[in-house]
Length: 315
Image (tube, one colour):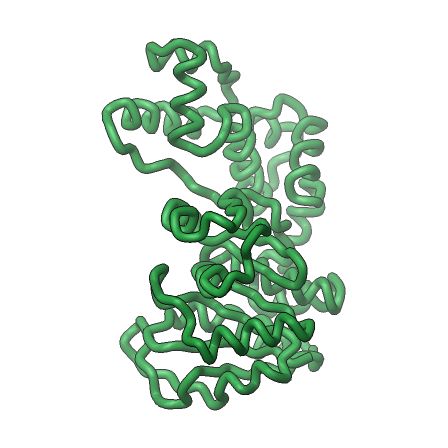
C-alpha cells in the first residue's frame, strides 16, 4: 500500500514525523511491510522547518498519482490555499479512489479545495471559530479526535493525528498489527474517533466568563461531588436558564456533557497511572458505581475500563 505524505516549508517536524513513524519506521520496526512510504513536496528543494533546521523531500507530488493514502500532516496557515497543482492532484487522487487525510490543520487544505463541503470534519479545537468562518459548507465537529467520510479523514491536533493514523492501520491490517506499531511507539493503541478533544478550560472573555471558568476549575478538582444545575447556578448567582445558556456559550457543551467528559478523562488518567480497584476509581471520578463507569466508558471509547487499562500498559 503506497502512502504519500506532504512536506512543505516551515512544517512542524513533529507533525511530519507522526505519519512517517506510524507508516514508516514504526511499521518496519514492528515487522510490518505492507506500507511503502514516500515523503513528497511540491519542490524537492531544501526547505526550512519550524524548528530551525532544514529538511528535503526526495519525491515530488507526482507520487500522489500512485498513492493509496495521501496525508497532509499540517498546513502553513489557515488563509493559505493549496496551489493549483496540489489541488488538482488531491482532487484527482480522491476521484480515482485514494484516501485523503488532513491531520490537524491539514483539514484546511482539504476544505480550501471543496473536498469537505457538506460533510462532517474536524480540526484542532483552537481553530474552530476561524475554520467555521472560512468554510460555512463544512459541518465542523470540534468535539472529536478524528472523523472519516467517503475516504476523507480529518483529525484534531497533534496527538489525535497519531490516533487517526493508527485507526487507518487498524482498518486495513487489524488490531494485532496496530498494537504492534503502538508498542514500538510506546503509545496507547486505540482511542476511538468519537472521543472528545480535551479542552481543559475555556479562555474567559469577560468578567462573567472568568467567574464561570473559576467554577469549572473547582468542578474539575471535585469531580466526585454531586454537581447539579441548580446548585451550580446558585453559586454563579444566576437563574437556571441563564446559567445553562452561559455555560453552553463558553464551553460549547451542556453542563451534563461537559461534566461527563471531565469524569471520563479523569478515569482514563487513573486507569493509566494507578492500580485503583474499579469501584474506588468510579467513586473518585463521580460515577458512583463501577456499573455506571463501565456503561459510559464503553459508550464513549468502545472499550471497557479494564480493557483500556490493559491495552495502555501493553503499549
